[in-house]
Length: 72
Image 1 (cartoon, helix red, strand yellow):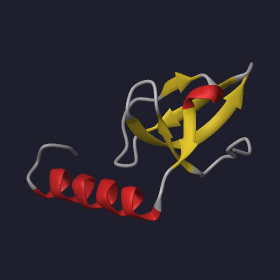
Image 2: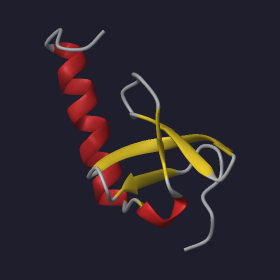
Image 3: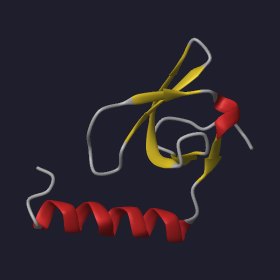
């Protein structure tokens, strides 16, 4: 896979989490959850491009969480 760039949505295969690429610094990729939240870092070898279906499912889950007050 090509190196992801800022704004790409990827899957952290080590943590089984999806996030949006915020930056790449010192050989590490910084991700933030699609619904917002705390960033985390991951080794570039542990990311893959998210599929359209995965992105849609994550966006729906984030919207549902906001609508029920689980996330602000």
